[in-house]
Image (tube, rainbow, N blue to C red; front, top):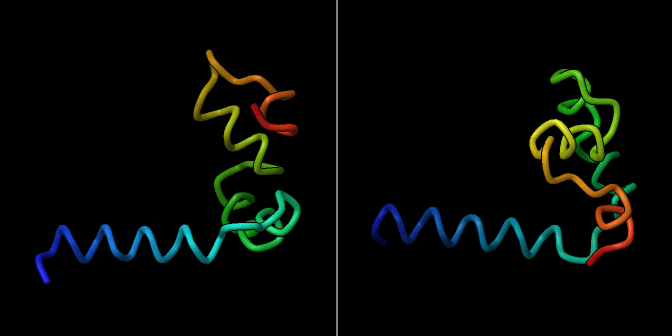
Length: 63
């Protein structure tokens, strides 16, 4: 398998493993990594990455 195809396959597999995961479950799973980067929550991490376009209501309830 080509390296690019292998990376795409890995990304898709990872996405499939996260499908249906709640925000609380994601924070539990990635909480230590978020804290090491100075974020108290997943919301904080997304806000810092998307400062000018972050909509907390859309983030918490969906589009």
